[in-house]
Length: 519
Image 1: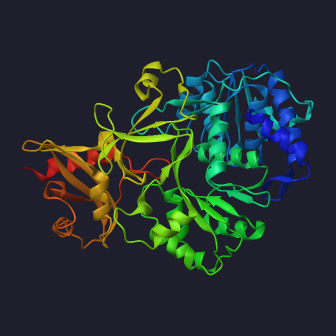
Image 2: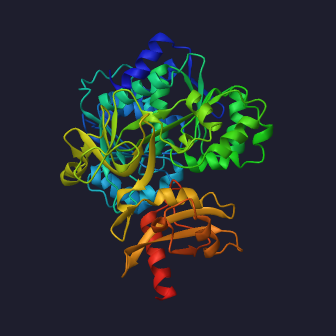
Image 3: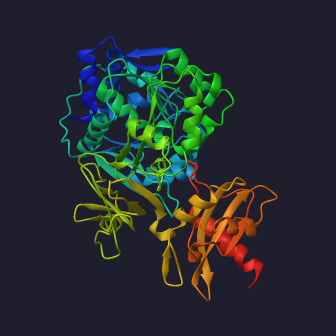
């Protein structure tokens, strides 16, 4: 099975069934397959050969989905670039992969124009809506045949290169094959079954990775997908009700925006069967309880964990587990866990020698399974550093209990070694995050002549919140050596493009504040 076969098979089995809904456009599987075939044949006519790279800079749209499957059928390699990227970022990614063709939308036209002059590999520029010197996307489709391209493709060849967010330097391209992609989707379907009556809604950026993974899963199941141009809570709630959507998705930062929205209590959520991916590391209990307070909501939640390198979700908490955790006061709190490992995957916590640690102890997370990245594009040394003996070395620190539930405790590089003892910031952040005056917290280590490193917390909090108050709050909740030696207050803390705290930048702020405060 290949990625492109999903559309072909749906067109054969259910030609009149709806595949995509976007604004006032409704596309059947037959119509989608016809346009995908035309586009694939057009790409081949432009000179695309197996394993040539096609980069696209497109917002959420039907065109993005068409191109994704067309590249698959033509045997090319797909590289999605976020439409908010600037010219320098586009030039770096497209140049790194040696993109032969770039397809862009109006929202990225200026940035693509800025980048294209730096790309020696670029042969063809295609724009949705046209515009010289680019080729018009619709004209390209109209001039091509809608027959199946018939390109011979090995399922073990690379189909996609997804770039990491690059919080610790230049982003790296994770390579994934057709087989790896579809195997992870198959496991997802086994854990979270989709039914013919399901209608999914995607409002997160599809180019970011999770969105396209979900779209592939919908095609695998043959269900309809409602595409929204961007994440907007009011818009999402409106379209869930209008299209009777049964499932949708949120990362933690978007979930917080959803559950803080004043219109949530009055929204019609009666069709919603599943809300997936709400949180893997944060406290989602208040938000879930607020959604459950909506009298129309009768659905459930799926917490899941994955990364670019794992190729999708590798651990899950299913609705019955989430429901049980919501009403439990057990410690550690399973609501903040990653769930348990998925079928075909193995997740272990190991010490610095690579040996498994005992249940309940912290260790570095290593993962094995059929969808791990094939490697980093053109980075053999980086690949060798993370892929060892069939295991992905994640750099994340986890705790795994005897029942197999997994808690993420941050990055290994974020660990603070104070007085010869390892301290894991996530444990301290969980405690300080319970204080009612704290809205955001990050714990880091700064150099200290006595301890080697000392634990400090960087907080966004109420104006009348004091350092002494927060340190005292840790009493009885944390061992003495884990309690922060200092609390530094900020109006905001650095985050990356997807809303995650950037610990490297926060640590630099903490060092500066520590130096300014004197000995």
